[in-house]
Length: 459
Ligand code: SIN
Ligand code: SIN
Ligand code: FE
Ligand code: FE
Image (tube, rainbow, N blue to C red; front, side):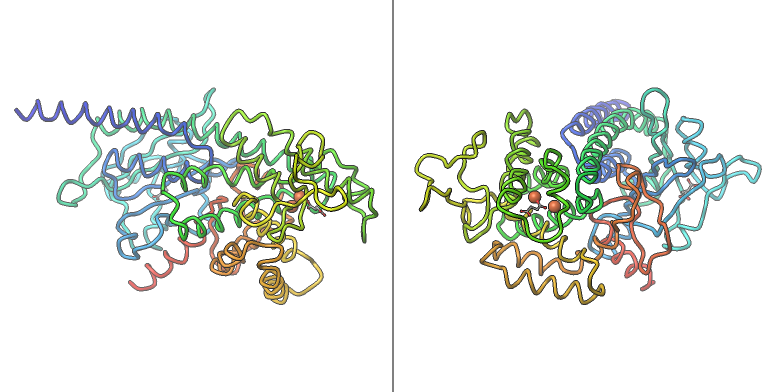
């Protein structure tokens, strides 16, 4: 009887693992994917906590961490990040051992690890969080052919009563199956992100203002704005999630059309004459044309963003109601003197309205002319003044609502970051920072960090 029940539950577990693994292919965004991989894997083996480490050269960098015990205490944010937690890639740690051996490893009681064992459990995280990792299953994340991308660590599986039990062979088999699909999905998402960042690098060779760091900041700010705006508007969760998954990549490409604009125009100090102005504005249609024959939802979103990011709420922006190919007014859209009508208000897609705010805000706040703090409040003031003129007032409200996060985005992606630090690899901190940062370019990390500090300082 018990055997039959076990068998049925095993089959159900296998099916569930198969479904979860297949669903990973729908995700585009590295951060969302890491969150999903970790929470799925934890759910499959009822693990209370878990982490993903990613390989960076000869180190392993803690990319994401979840812990439902600590989350219950703090009741907010699902990530539990640690300041610059980096392990040497050697056999001395469980994670390092598994990364090098490329085989799963189960330790069901970290207290029992033999002193002669090649690896030891590093208790520094346990000590800093007051959370004891007793049972650990560490699985290698391997992409073809035999390259280790990182490791997935599952911590403290719980039985029905919430007591820690050990991992068994079935758990290992399930984990092995799941990380195979997860590794492939992660590799695809990381490749997509690094290709995107490389195109931004090409733009920045024409226009030093358009750095990969600027693109990342704009992507982060746009995502924050959409998160806030869409919650307020009660956009259904599945739609919000779909957009949040694509928005960072699409936003990074907003100025991709600048690749075809002469550098002399892009970098000219002072005012542009009429011809130069027309050339500059052409970056919108040139970029939009690249994404016009959309094959995927990501192409469609990128198209909208490129096309609408210089429209203004009051209708005074560009390119307005034009034919994408000719740049001429669409039928019935020629205004006085044959000039094209600008798109206005909600005729502009919400993604374009959001990008306008994110792009201009970042340009303002990144100016090197003022002292940092002054820059920020002055920039916010300018954004508020332009609410209802240049910008959608609702999006400006979202900007104000997320003000605390904005500064952290600025600090997270300084202009002097090397491109490799942004191109889908985990960056190493160049210098100690004043507050703990989540070292992977994870959008939610900074919020979670505050939560974690509150959690652990109160105990
Ligand atoms: C390790 O794998 O030994 C480091 C992670 C941990 O201590 O939990
Ligand atoms: C930009 O796209 O960054 C500048 C375009 C403009 O000056 O209109
Ligand atoms: Fe632009
Ligand atoms: Fe820009």
